[in-house]
Length: 208
Image 1 (tube, rainbow, N blue to C red):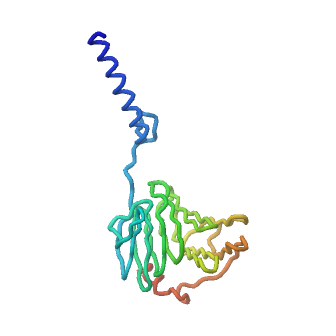
Image 2: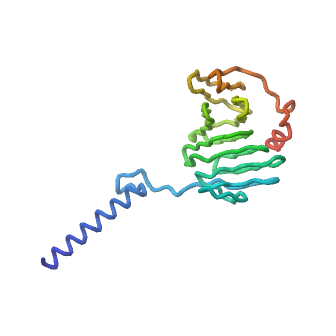
Image 3: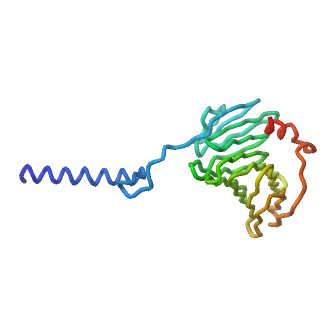
């Protein structure tokens, strides 16, 4: 085998490896949509005991919980995070999993408890799921409560509107509060006043 042939074979192997690595990382030259650095939440404020579970290891919440992390607040605890145009408030006794964090879309799973998400970017879709419900919105401030022991989810728009659906049932797009029964697969319009809520201190914290 001549030296020139060896050089050509070596260049070909390098090109193939580069393309494979490029596809894996999503580089445009390899046919991907472009490399995107992994995003994470930024911890802004915590009160009381707030934990983070990642790869089955639990400890105090980090400054930058990434996708895949589960964040939990204890009784009389709360937490506030941000990522770009999005701000997340967690009330006490709440468990939330970060399923997806991208510049144009995010997804959280609320296992139990109460949250508020403020999304100031119309081009970024926020999705919040429970066992049987899905709530999506763009430019809005939405509070979601998962009463896991009741199989009930409340979606409360503090500004803007949202779309909510339940497995085996209907969906609705509205600027009004709704209660969703996961057991009966029904969506019912309701009334809600933050000042008259048992969680009024949490909503007052959001309005600060």
